[in-house]
Image 1 (cartoon, rainbow, N blue to C red):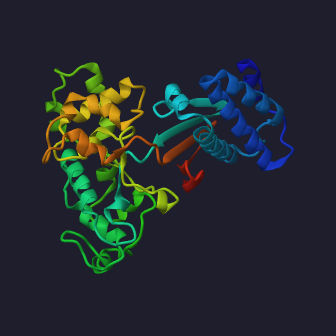
Image 2: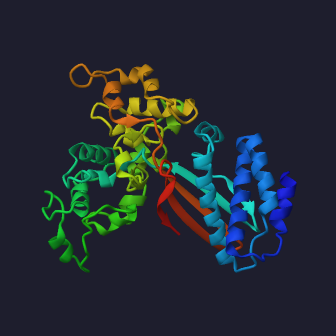
Image 3: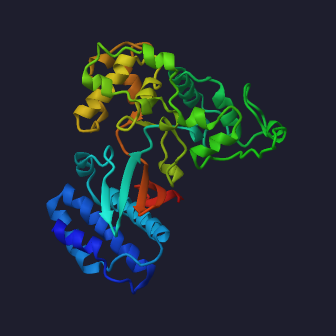
Length: 364
């Protein structure tokens, strides 16, 4: 079967029916290849369909072809997330492994991540009320402490998002933006992408995308007493601010929730969920999640962890405090598809609301 697919990939039938048929065939073939690994019965259906419908990649330029392959990869990701059972996707490791698929003389790589395990900067301002959400601000401040960045950075973000012209104590409103060189325009609305943070005073690409640990901190951090699983719970990527925050919101505001998805939350996000959270407890949640195949099927699964039984306020335990702040449900996905043909590369990215079954953001 794979030999037949490879033969089709390397010897495409000349294009005669336009871009729509070409993209449709590419989407089907990528999907068929992935589903072969997921379930044999489902895979056979898609492979037969692929063999019947595929008519080859166009003889157009490699740049256009790579973009079309990337778009096919994105649509394949949408198909997987809306048609394949979640258990099968976790078993396959689709959220931890970016499969690379040979196709049409090039390759397509597909990366899928769940975004609601990150702190959302748009939630710093209460939806419909135009007021600061103090609970969310506390999350961001604790995250800042954990990453070693100024805790008052988020004041300017709140002013950038809210619609009023009253500055936060360490924020910036319209007058401050107009005095910048060159002057900038404040948005006073929801952010669409993290890159918008670069327009806000106090943010730059290093703060957003670099490993925030100092060389001394890296050198002096001892992991000798940790098991291999505990060491793997925290990676250099966890110290990058952009990997801990997001801007994406679901399509329907009525279904929106500020609960953090514990199944996709990075270590530092978990650490910032409560002032009583300890590094040992946060690391335990991550390692236990890995042991369970990448996710907790129920929040109740956390109740058995001894590290979460410490008393917080009143008679509450850390587990009970967390249980009203987290969810085990996937809410929104980021799909990144990279395609390459010879020296030409292309990337497309889409953010999928699986409940609405539509993209809420797209870029290429």
